[in-house]
Length: 450
Ligand code: GLV
Ligand code: MN
Ligand code: MN
Image (tube, rainbow, N blue to C red):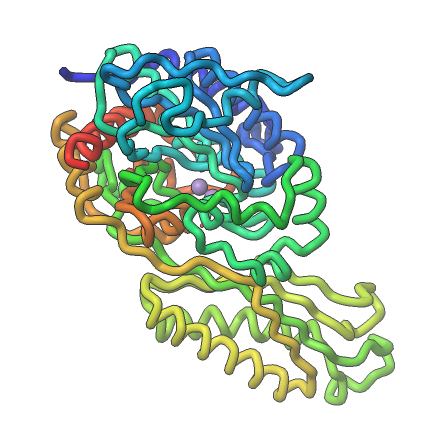
């Protein structure tokens, strides 16, 4: 059977979710502001579950707040499961999230059924674009509806999943890390967004920090993970290629750097004897860039935030705090870059007579994508006569959390001007539909060969 997603329904969903947390920049570009577990993000997640229920899909929210729509595989000769009794005052969605124990109600024990996950994330960076993450979630939902409508019997359950905090406003790949079992308790103590923001977000979402780990899944229960995403870079658009088959995802490490100098009078303190923490921070940022350009091909460094204290026109900064992030395609390179940047930070401190605190703020390991998933994506693109190329991802994605526990793959479509994490982020609508069809067909291939 040759299946295609329903492009109108996909567009209606994409437009509906794009309206949640929407804003326009001064040039009229439309973006979304849905940082993880903000009210707008929670609204988008509720919208997703409602759309899944409308489609007659089972829904589920796990202990890490990952939101899922599930299309159960054909149950063969089993009689339908008896509904579980609702608790006094229980809500319908509580019923939906419970799985009956095996053999309950005199039914035959259910055969082991694995789950193929399709997904991405509905959170955005602050003042971000509409496509990053959301496209992958609505395409996953659409893939499930297409299979359901076609009455296709697959040997696996299909699950469209919206992961919690992919973007790292709080911690980064929190939901996918919890599901994969790689979320470490220590990481929750030093999240890159700060403890307070994490605690507030979890409380707003009704999540219990001590129970996040319960979202862990047995790898044996999974048949794989596929994610459709915009490229967020210029390679596909510049080479006019429709589909990127992702070969691997960069590793990311975060640090908070604090330079400590001496706040003093900006006019009377001699220039040559200042202990200017702002100067240290600025020198570090400039030199880190030169270091990566000179010695670390394929890697990246970013100082995404700098804060000076006390912070006034007429005071030499006594303290400067930097948000440092760096990326490399493999663990060896990531380790070497870490050593080089931390050494540089120390040299700069000495040069300006500053104190230095280095505080790790977690990160994500580099992850190669599965050969089988890459082959399924390539075959899907070929079946649609779409041009394709292999490429690595310089952006982080939930697929890198999933890769160590289940065959994982990613499909990229072109980003206009290679722009992302900005309201100017844009992908041609036909490219989005093509990507959704590749996701659907790659999923069928993965399911068949499981
Ligand atoms: C996620 O988009 C990241 O690469 O930071
Ligand atoms: Mn993303
Ligand atoms: Mn992103």
